[in-house]
Every structure is written in structure tokens, then in C-alpha cells.
Image (spheres, rainbow, N blue to C red):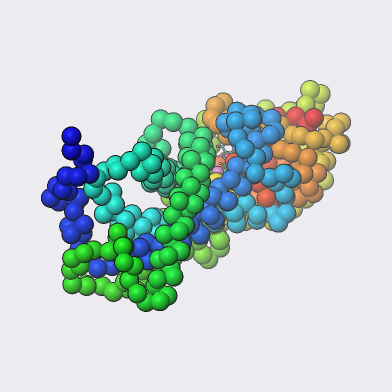
Amino acid sequence: MRRLSDLPAPPGPTRASFWRSPLRSTWTTTLIGLVLLLALTVVAVTGFLSHSAYQPDLGRNAPLGRGADLQLLVVGWPTSPSWIYALTQGLHVAVGTALVPLLLAKLWSVIPQLFAWPPVRDPLHAIERAATGLLVASAIFQLATGLANAQLWYPWHFDFLGAHYYGGLVLTASVLLHVVVRLPRMRSAWRTRQELEPLRDDALRSPRPAEETISRRGMLAGVGATSALLAVLTGGQALGGPFRRLALFAPRGTGTRGLPVNKTARVARITAAMVGPEWRLRLGEERALRRDELLALEQHEEVLPIACVEGWSSTQTWSGVRLRDLAALAGVPDADELRVESLQPQGAFRRASLGRAQVHDERSLLALRLNGADLPPDHGYPARIIVPGLPGVHCTKWVGELWFS
Ligand SMILES: Nc1nc2c(c(=O)[nH]1)N[C@H]1C(S)=C(S)[C@@H](COP(=O)(O)O)O[C@H]1N2
Ligand SMILES: [Mo]
């Protein structure tokens, strides 16, 4: 019986001569791969840090259920500098977006291998191809879900957080495996290039190269420039201030002084009656405070950013009552945890738990005012949480209850 590998490759893309770009070579692929690896490392580290910043060990913060996830940090997420999450998440989204042209270039550079003949040589080759398939699929999945989330577009029916988290684990493992498997090839490609002598058995080099229409350097510069431009246009929303005008892909309008509105009061189903004169802040079992009673307590002003998981951030001047003063008022001055419940009848962000570091940081406020005026309805009137360093999702708006424990 003849084996598949003994048969000649059918005409078409399975034949090496079908691929004619003179720019493909193992060296080109190695160079793009190294830049891609660097960018992926930044995205992976900031991604897993973002998960830690949610403080999944507290209350009902764990989006995947407790114990379902690795915790990258041994120590807790810090409150200083207050812009730490704006930085890590701004990097995650900006560098993640810049990955798109790099990934496309990398896939283009190795496309002849997708059609390589025979499709499978031996069991080891089959495993290698399956691993590569998983790598490509998880990379595309992560970029697609991440970009869609940053654009507030949820065309799927699964939970974004869980899918993106486990997708990240699969991608990280596949990249590590890929690097280990490909390391010898990368090293020899690199060395050969330095000696300016083409690799003799370079599977990616076309045996029948067409006339060059763009130099290799020109192609690499084009890919790099497109990536850098995307990073700058996306990063503007994390830098804020004048840079925000650069953020062409930011999907939100800007409300008060450039502060985006994540969810309006209307969408959250907050009615005028819920936040009218009848509103009380429930402080544990014992106490309920009117808004004027809260305003009569010692007020503090803090300049703090809100940094959203979607990559934008905005720094504003907030004033209100310190959380630690409220903890003392509730009779739990040494509180380890604060459970915040909003008035919002439903929705994933209607509650959050804050840890000891946030409760006792003097910049952490139950904010009543924003930039010298009452909180606007869309930013959480009558009262919202604002704390340094945490993801915006933990800065609960339209607060109804505070439980210190
Ligand atoms: N009750 C409630 N609080 C909330 C949210 C929400 O949907 N409901 N969204 C959170 C998220 S994800 C962010 S980024 C910030 C945004 O605050 P802003 O809309 O005032 O800019 O509010 C947080 N607080
Ligand atoms: Mo957010």
C-alpha cells in the first residue's frame, strides 16, 4: 500500500512553488515572532494582573466562582499609585489592539505551512499541528473577544470574563509550548542571517520567488508603524486629558468633564423615586442616613481616576465621606471588608466587595459630589464609591447599602 506522503502534492497551495512572495523566510517569521512574543507577554501579564485587581477572594467578586482561578499576586492589589490600574489596563488594551497587525503579518508569513504536504507525516507531526492550531485559534479568540468587549459589542452568548480568562490561559500555555518547540529553528535562522547566507533548507522561502514589489524592510516597517499607530489611538483613552482626543476607537461619549458614562441611570433602571428624598444609605443592621446627614459629616476632597476594564480612564475631583469614617460610624473601625450594594435591581455590577487596603486608605470615599457639584444622575447620585487603584467596576454607583465586617 502506498502512503500519502509518497504521493506527489496535488496542484495548488500544497506545492511550495505556489507561494511566490520573495519576502517569506524563516528569518522574517522569526523577527515578527519575537516582536509578537514581547507584546503578548505584556498583554498576558497585565491581563492576569487585571484579574487579581478584581480581588476575587473577596465577597462575591469572584466572577468565575471561588477557587476556579489562579491568583497571580501573593500580596493583595495595592491602592498606590492611584493610577496603577489605569496603567496596567491601558497597556493591556492598547498593546492588545496593536497585536492585530503583528498577528496578521505572522500568519501571512507562515501560511504555506498550513497547506504543507503531506498534511500529517507521523503522530508527532500531528500533535505539533494540533498544538499550532490551538495557538492560532486561541490568539484569534482572545483578540476578537477583547476588541469586541472594548467596543461594547457582545455578539455572543457566553460570559466574557470567564471566556477571556480561560482563553488567556490556553493562549499562554500554547505560546510557551510553541516557543520551546521552535527555539532551535529561531536560533539557526537568526545566526544564518547574521552571516548573510540563506538557510539551506528554509521551508518558508519560495523556490520560485516573484519579482519584489516591496522590500522586506518596507514590509516590516509598515507592519510596525500600523501597530504603533493603533496603540497610540487606543492608548489615548487611558492617558486621558488632551490625549483623549486621539482615542478614535473609544466607543463612548464623554459626560461631565470628559468622564465617560459606563451605564446611564436609565439603563440601570434607577428611578427618580429611588434616589429622591426617601433615599437612605443603609449602614449595616443599625443605621440609615439621609443625604443631608452624610453631607454634615466631615467631607474630604480627592483627585482620583476611574479606570475601566475596557481601557479608558478619567481623573476627576471627588468629595464625600471617607470609608474609614463610615466604618467607625458603623461600629466596625477595624473592618477587613466592605460589601457595597447599589439600588440597581439587576446587573452584574450592582455589588462589589472592597478589602482592608481600600477601606483604610484615606483617599477612599463614599463620594457625594463631583467637581464641586452634586453627583450627576449617570455618575451615581446620590452616592457612589471611589477608591484609588482598583478597576472602575468596583466603584459602585447609586449606593444603597454598606456592610462593614
Ligand atoms: N451600580 C453600578 N455601578 C457601577 C457600574 C454599573 O453598571 N452599575 N459600572 C461600573 C463600571 S464597569 C465603571 S467603569 C464605572 C464607571 O463610572 P462612570 O459611569 O461614572 O464613569 O462605574 C462602575 N459602577
Ligand atoms: Mo468598567
